Length: 193
Image 1: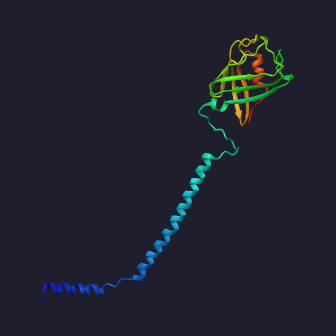
Image 2 (image 1 turned 180 degrees about the horizontal axis):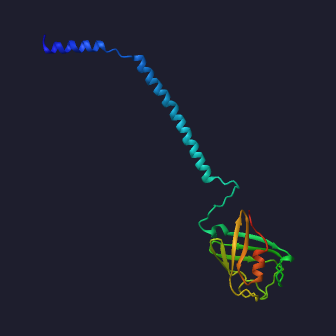
C-alpha cells in the first residue's frame, strides 16, 4: 500500500471515531447568549441611572433659584433696581429720610439714586453719579458724599447679602449716619422680582 493510501485510510478511521456532541455544544452556546442578553440591558439601566443622579446633582436647585450659587462676578448679581421704604423710626437726624428710596446698580459700577420727595439735602440739589466697588461680599460706595453738607465726606463699606429678589446691607465701616440709615434700615426689593 502506498503512503498516500495509508494516510487516507488512517484519516477515515480517525474521522469515524470522532462523533460531535451537537446537543451539548448547542446548549452551552444558547446559555452564554442568554447570559449576555440579560447583562447588557442591566448594565445599560445602571448607566442611565448614574447619569440621572449626576444630572440632578449638578442642575437641580430645590429653592428654584435662578441665580448661580457661586457667581463669577458679584456685580452681575447686584445689577438692577432696588427699592426700600423708610419710616419715622429709621431717622438718624434731619433731613427726613422717610419715604421710598430707589437704587439702580449698573454693570459699570455706577449707582443712580431716586430719593423720596421728602428728602431735601442741605445743598438743595441731589447729585447722582455715585459709584460702588465690590470685593466678594463687601461693597464700598461714595453714595451721598457729594455736596450734601453732611458728615459723608468719605466712602462707606458694607457687607451685602442677596437672597432671591431681596438685597440687604450690613455696615462694615462708615461715618455717614444718613448713608447707614438708608442702606441698612431694611431689605431692598428688586424691581421686577
